[in-house]
Image 1 (tube, helix red, strand yellow):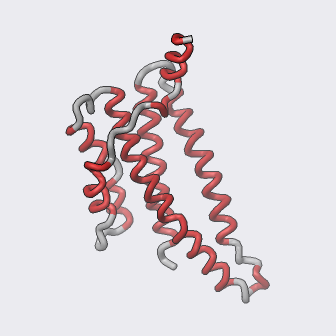
Image 2 (cartoon, rainbow, N blue to C red):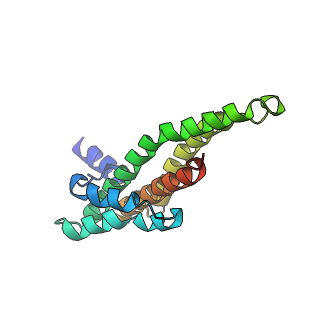
Image 3 (tube, one colour):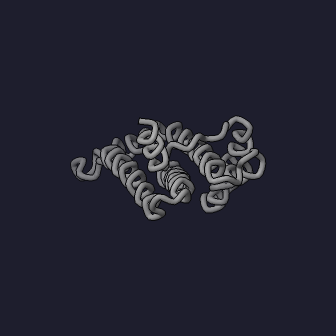
Length: 168
């Protein structure tokens, strides 16, 4: 039984323990919250917290440390994704409402398509990152690859949705 549990743990890339995000939250918020930053400049924030964590935390340069720090930053981006979501939905609904009087509502599907796209994106992100991890076979790099993929997809999604919906 112990052997089976160990094999399952090693085969599952997402189970690396994440680092504590609290010491890094202010730096993350400061990077992402720059009012004068262009959306492209905010892409420079991706990976900064994970890198700082790897440098500061004991064991941050180990496979588990690197994947833990990266998943910790991914968690910060995921919090932003979730906290931004109501604003994106409100913008999509407002656009639908503004468009409804024209063309008999034919083009009033922004909210519906936003929700469908987000569901499809989550499925894609999860499958893509699992496939990226699998490309390392049983090697320990699978954990780092999975964490890096999750961070990259999640952070990019935050910035893409902000760019698309915060103009309304």
